[in-house]
Image: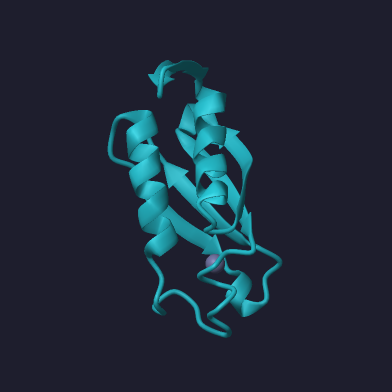
Length: 107
Ligand SMILES: [Zn+2]
């Protein structure tokens, strides 16, 4: 898969890195592509200095969260051209080393 985004022809890997870079530049945290499982349609992002979790100590899933998930959903939808599912699976706010988000773009 490749796609033209903002006038540039990008490979799938470049498109996924674009998601991480866009969120980092916007200041939501330091996003990195941790793993791409292409056959499963899964991308895993790790995030340090996540603005949500750095302000929420000791809170987990039901706290005020959803900003980063929402941003990831919007960007991934733009990049993959379809609905995606996003879930946070590691939480810096409960003292895990960083946050981790799984983006699933294939059924
Ligand atoms: Zn988090």
